[in-house]
Length: 303
Image (cartoon, one colour):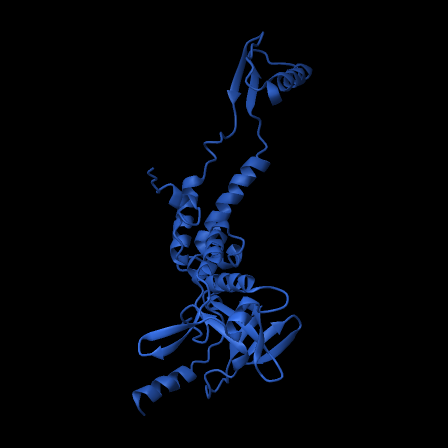
C-alpha cells in the first residue's frame, strides 16, 4: 500500500465523533469543572468585546468575485447570482447579519454552518445560518467514507442533510474530530471563570456587604439601649445623604471608628487584566482595539 493510500485509510478509520470539550472535562492539574462554570463564552464581556470587534470590522472588506483570464491575471465579476445571494441570503435577514452570525460562531466554536435552500432546478436560492451547536458531520463507523451527511438537530427532530447542501466553515482541525474545526475556548475556561468571579465578587461586595460605615462606641460605662438608638438616628439624620461630610462634635467621651472596606480596597482591576490579555491573545484581537483595559493601560498617545 502506498503512503498516500495509508494516510487516506488512517483518516477514514478516524471515527471518533465527540466534541473536543467532552474529551477534556477537567483542565490540567485541577479537578474543578471550569468549562461548565465558564459557559460558552457568550456571557463573557471580554470574549464578546473581541467578537463584536470582529463582527464590526469583517464587512469592511466587501465580498468580491473574480475569475482567471490569464496566468496570474484575474478580472473582477461585478454581477453574479452568488454575489446577490450573499448580499440577500433570505427574505428575513441580509448578508451583514449572516456574516455577523457566522463570525461569532466561527470564533467561539471553531465551526460555522450555512444551509443551502435549492430551487426546483437544484440551484441555491437561499443561505440560512445554522448554529454550530445544532449541526454535526456524520460518517459510517466502519470508516468506509470520510463524510456522508450532516445531522441538523431542529428541536425535537433530527434532519439528515446532504453534504452538498451544507457550507461548513472550520478553524483548523479538531484533533479529536478531523471533520470539525477547533474551538479556541477550550484553553480559556480558567481565564473566563476568573474574570466572572472577579466581577461577581465586586458586585457582591457592593450589594450584599452588610456592615456599617462607622462604629460609634461610647466610652466609660456605656450607653443605654434607648440612648444608642437615639444616637444612631441622630447620626443618620445629620451625616448621611446630602449631609455627608458635615463636622461631628460629640458631647461625651466617644470613639468613632471606620468599619468595612473602602472602594480602593475593593478594586480588583489588576486581577482582571490577566484574563483580558490571554483571551484577546488567543482570539487574535489586540486588547487595545477591543477597548479592553489591558490594552488601554499600555497604550501611548501623541498629538
